[in-house]
Length: 623
Image 1 (cartoon, rainbow, N blue to C red):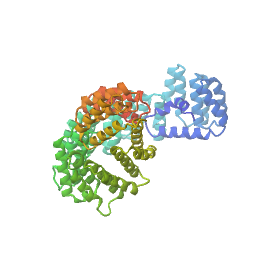
Image 2 (image 1 turned 45 degrees about the vertical axis):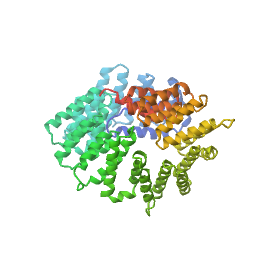
Image 3 (image 1 turned 135 degrees about the vertical axis):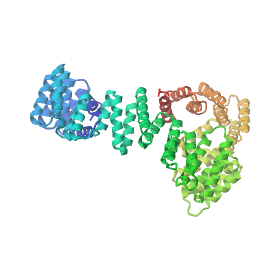
């Protein structure tokens, strides 16, 4: 069934916001489309094609023939009626509904169809009479009432749908029943006050429905800042009247987080935790949510609060583990390295391993070694930790392999090139047909490149370019192109040898030596095609040292002078990231994300750029 056509025909069903009836009707339509697409497919397909092409008049006789063969099928009737209404054949549409009434005498929704036909024909008074007559049957039973409410909602008659539910509410004797449905209808009308009142009734009577209420509140506030303010005021008022009510506290804290007010949310959740004597339970959940959203500072404060209850707290171990992991994430994103933060992270790792020895056999041990080697420059200690880890009996093979990959990297830091190659080769052998094996082969190829053995590196890279892992494939392709483009016919590979060594120095965290060597290459070989690669590597060094404006300058040169080359999209993406994360300039970050998306649509960064652009755009909307 062509989606565009069905969207047009059943747009009012898609608009349904209440009850299960909408889902049922839509499912029936889709099922019906499948069934009567089989018999007779030629006429129905031809009719729909005609409508899609704008030839509605030619399609109507075909629809009539199909309906005449299945007059009891309301789905066929619904499609036929919509086509008649689209063609403004109101008399024929009225006759169709009246005929259907004779067949389906107990279906009050047909009165709404009659009213809708009259309204479209300009007979508003007569339309209102049909609507009112349908409304009189609303209290008959719940199923009937929901069908009527769905039918009214489908034609954007929310006021009538509200009256249906109010009548059902009266019949049930429960003033809180159907509050969720009423809230949705009030929201569709833009009546925030009544929508909120209905939702608050739901929460008061059914606290277990809090998740559904939150979802409804999001729909209510996602487009209109004024509605957000109204929701905040309503919940604040209820919290003032009933400060000990956990539900209102929970809702207010949730709202703070939705609107990015994480500091207020933290204060709120700690206050609630203290009043409820929960010993950090709520704060632990909050910290996890904040960390997931990248709000590391607030998450760290949350975990610190949980840890303040001491080792007797049931959450102490998990909070310490999460806190340690969080410290690692913060360190990796903070440039240049924050020595105080590093000391705190290493201290927490030591405490975790001391209090809970079982973590010495878990992946966190590998993360600890990474901090020692990459940030504290205690490479020997890192190698010792990993050698202990890989020799523990019964350790998962994947953890052993990942640890050996890191060991290879740390051996490179100590200039133990052959030891590094041995580690990579062992992982390659362990996981020949696995991503870990491909990663090991790439690192060995990169090691050969560092050593200046470009021919052997190319042999490995030619296979890795077709890796099932996009990241490995892209890295292999870039390195292969780098070697190919800079191995000239005259065999003067001196610039490439020097560049590879500078790349190695950077890998070993010897940023100043790497930059000096890069500058010498640029000066000695000004016409060499490595110029854009030198700029990119220089920008990477500047970023690692916290010289962000220098990095921006280098990257902008890549874009302006070599934007059409292979590194253009990399430069645009890195510029966006630097402006977003380190220079706190959202507008410039958005500018470069947009440039990447529009100028380099085939880039592997496009998906990340789109997501980052949307997040930044959302954050700039008025709250």
